[in-house]
Length: 230
Image 1 (cartoon, one colour):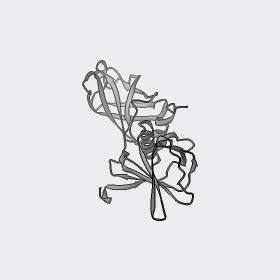
Image 2: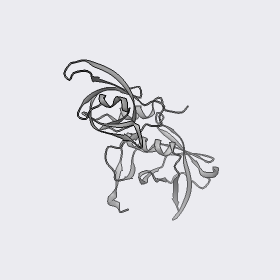
Image 3: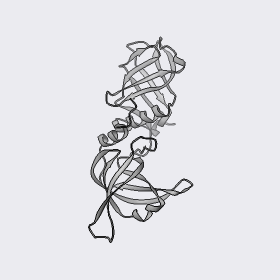
Image 4: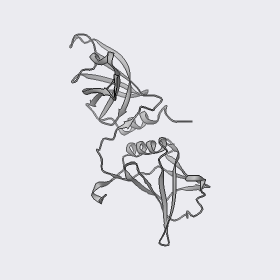
C-alpha cells in the first residue's frame, strides 16, 4: 500500500484492542533489528498481555532463543492486524521471550476512526439497560439485560432473540447503565437498525448509536476487567 493509506495512532484503547485481538487469535508477528546494515528477523506471537502493568510478552516461534538481539538498537514489530507497525527501545530478553512495554504510538492502515471491539468470546458481556414499557410517554421504565456483540466509543450492538423484537424498535432510545459489569454513566443510545444474526432466524442484531461518546477508559475497562486470564 502507498504511504497515504497509513496513519500514526496514539489512542490507548485502539492499541490495546488490537493487541488483545492479536493475542487471543495467536496471530503471527514479525520482529527485527537493523544492525550494521543487516536485518535480523524473528517470528513469534504475543504470549501474554497485561493492560494494567502496561506490558506484553512476545514468544518466538519454536522456542527460538533471541540471542542475536542487541541492546542499544530498537526492535521493530509488524502484525497483519491493520498492518500494525511499531518499535521499542525498552525491552527485556529472557530466552525465547521478549518483555516490553505496550507501545504509546503505532502505525496503522487507515480505517474508520471508531473501531469496534468484538465481545462475543468474552466471559462478561451483559448489557444492563432501562427502557420505557407500555404506552409511549407512560413514564414506566423497566430494567433488562441482553448480551453485547460488539462495542465502540460511538455505538453498540446487542444480541436479542425473536421474542424481544417488539421491545426494540428503530428510533427508540434506551438508557445503558453498564456493560460487562462496568458502569457507563447512564448513557443514552438510539436503535438505528435490526437485522438477523447470520442464518439463525431466532437471533437478531440490534445496532445502537450513543448520544455521547464513551471515554477510552470505559472501553478499556469493558475489554479487560473480568476477562483477563489469571
